[in-house]
Length: 373
Ligand SMILES: *Cc1c(COP(=O)(O)O)cnc(C)c1O
Image (cartoon, rainbow, N blue to C red):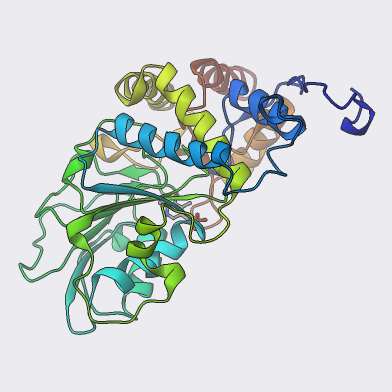
């Protein structure tokens, strides 16, 4: 393939990369249609003679991109009109402190569920801004379960959970609503299943798992959550100011946001979140069924706490794991190594991962078992 410098100026780049089965936890595979259209927009965006990388963020064309993205998020998640959709920077990790900075006064209490590394990082940051009560933790179970039987204090300003625990492969199947001020880190399962999104006070997600490339952070906040604290907030961290300026306080990550829009359009064309949930259910059911049936492999999470996005599994020894790792790599399977804190394997089955990838992974597991079992 010619390098892009050899292509005529108005050429459209088509996705002719060779096939890799990408199961990475994030950033990760995007739909081919999105990659093709984003690539074309780099060369010439909508026949304007300008690359999407070159346009002004205050141009009407880009203001329209932000507006359409906002509307699609609202529509796909069936949000209420007082739920504001913001596209911010800094990743989900910035929300770990931006949330308490905006919602919690120093002497007030917020409740947190500790279900993994991301939750515990959110807890650590929140302690800088108020009194944090950890109402449940699965740390003693190596974060391989979702806690049950806990109470959230009435005076808590909000209750924070991580809906899907990307590293350990657990997921809240039933959201423990205690009030309408629930705050949720949905970085790794937003848009993958239907939830009553309009019952949350605030939802946030880094884009790079289910929404697009890295660089955009989606925040959805109900207006009545804001304006209740005394603390002075720096402009760039103030949700109210972002709402007033429609996510354009400063230069947004233009290309990343445009690619999110393409992914949102793609998601709508697939039938939206409800259709995606059915597709995702089949993918994860198929993979778990093979792992449960196969004598060489086992899963790390059991029962209903299993994540439909991140499937964690292992063989019975480090040597066996190494052997399977090499086998899978040989078959162009990418990104199934577990997180460095969890080890073994993790296959991430986000929205953009087609059923054919999952079938291929299952076939690879079966072939390995036949040859090495
Ligand atoms: C990936 C991830 C994060 C971290 O996201 P960044 O955008 O890298 O800050 C936080 N929470 C969850 C649940 C994640 O999966």
